[in-house]
Length: 105
Image 1: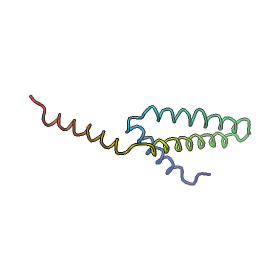
Image 2: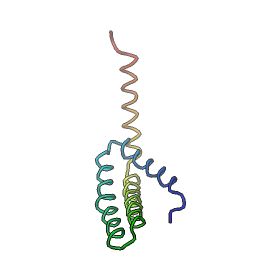
Image 3: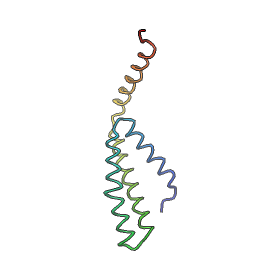
Image 4: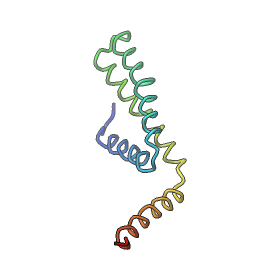
């Protein structure tokens, strides 16, 4: 079904990193809850046990959850204000550099 799951995992890690790096860890956590517990697990349970697909149905549920998480995090990444993030991080970096090199003794 999925030809290259490794590339999907790389993209998933990238999106999680964007949510984490921008300080939106709570959005990443809610994306996990919605994708896996509210979508992936019920689909996998239904297909695996009631749909009589056994392990294949459970794996389809994992794929559904992973795809849903990718879509949610892609929307979050698309809505991110990149200029605001760059300015925020530059202030943070240069503030720490100034404190590091010009600290009065």
